[in-house]
Image (cartoon, rainbow, N blue to C red; front, top):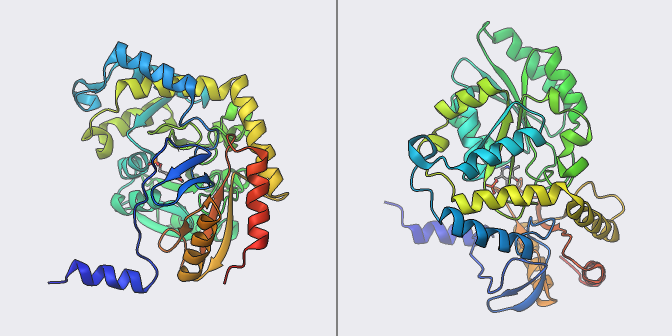
Length: 381
Ligand SMILES: *Cc1c(COP(=O)(O)O)cnc(C)c1O
């Protein structure tokens, strides 16, 4: 039998071994890292600086008193409490959909909904750079899967035309993409994708994980910014990024949501998220959708612009190439007081290891300027 030690050595030799780092402070713009001390954090997805927000901490404490810490069971047994239904109602309103369903994480959302909606007679067409959770969900579904090169609309059209020729009358054809891509920070051409899927009578799932809270009026996402909500059958996302908490959601018409709650295994066979956490997510949404959200988005965008004139989102990659080189670059940066871990295969394609900088409303402008100056000074090889 294979020895796990040998497999770890092989990962190490390829520059692919991963290790946990211990933060000894709350998640924030500045964190304290075991062994390295204080550093400026340019690697979290806490885009609006809410993970350690005083407002949300106070709300969480209040909800703990009201609802307790645990939900005790899965949603369909006896774990559905008022906060879960209230959150789903708020989400459906915000996303202009009939209904919504929440999950323990974004990952569980993706791996739950794709197999719930698609099976062996169906077709799933995904962008090449879709998140691991979408790929795993697609694989689990047993549907015929086709991948198009990142944002390549001609290839998407080819796959759709092929799927149409193979589909029966009952087949579902589902296109899957993200609005803001997690490792490159670029956008999908959503308007064009909506047009194309309609031509072929397909439906569309858009994962707004990195756009919810950051784009659109009230932070409602890129779909809202482009006025496309009614053209997107499945809007999914997470509370784990700009909302600073954790959990995932999908918004769709009522029948689709009812079907998902009857079929999604990650929903059915998993304990409902903590009611106190869930109620706090509703507070986070109100905050993000209100004037405080606007203020934080303005600070976030000002920080992004201080770093780059061209960035399309709060995610800015610096592609280095080889794993070792990316690891060395990350270590040099850490020694200079900046946390930005190397992102390697299989999170990104081979040969494109990178530093992935993420910006937050909680960074001060001088933090961003300091990062920029340090990057200009350091030599990465
Ligand atoms: C982070 C992410 C997820 C997973 O969300 P979690 O709530 O962290 O499990 C899903 N999709 C995309 C595109 C993501 O970036």
